[in-house]
Image (cartoon, rainbow, N blue to C red; front, side, top):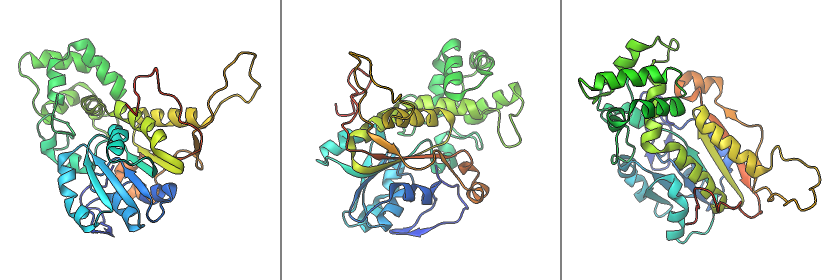
Length: 336
């Protein structure tokens, strides 16, 4: 997640960055990048993490689903003389892309989960209810939009989506109202949907619009954000060399829970130290070691300057030399 327009810019390699990533210093400390190391920035955005890595002499393969972000980064690619490669793909596809590039391992991976402020700031992308725009929310600008989900899902499925991905307690009321209204006029704009929810619900707080959770739920569903995060974490385990670092910044409980549980499982946290029973299969050796207290939050100063940093949580782990956990039998094989 990036700072919005109007915040202080940081001069970096390749020119000024329009936005500064949340927890930039903490992410760089966590990654501990070294000159000539190979690093993956799974969420290029405006290039904030990538620029910081390049400043430290690293080589970077940066991913972004959004064609606008890839196009905007081409000048930086040219300025880096081969040290930066931009890939238009989901970060859940990083294992496949690295295989195609014949890169067997990397020294660090960073992921900044969720929508970028550039997307939020563009009303025509339909991510935000702060300015009216089409009800879109597609990071890749293709596939089913938020309007498609709102207008096509039946009431039960829509309510379940809003509850699961938005943790919205009033999901059934919202879904019922949407289904009644769309019979008269389909939902096509962010203001139309936000206005309906605002009429239904009181504000959650001084700075929180009643539509916030519903918009979050639609965005996550449209872009399969939680599935992509799970695939990226699994791929990271296979791609990181021993001693390589993983740094993940999340912004809400659904994302953070996935990261926390993955790292707990793969670091052996909470595992019993008692002897195995006869015939009991030994668990795999930990493939990650947690680095420092978890999670790392934004400082009071950063949160004051950038409200979007208030909910940010950073988790950092180091890859061990143990074999990657088997993902066979699960829903995803990162090397397939």
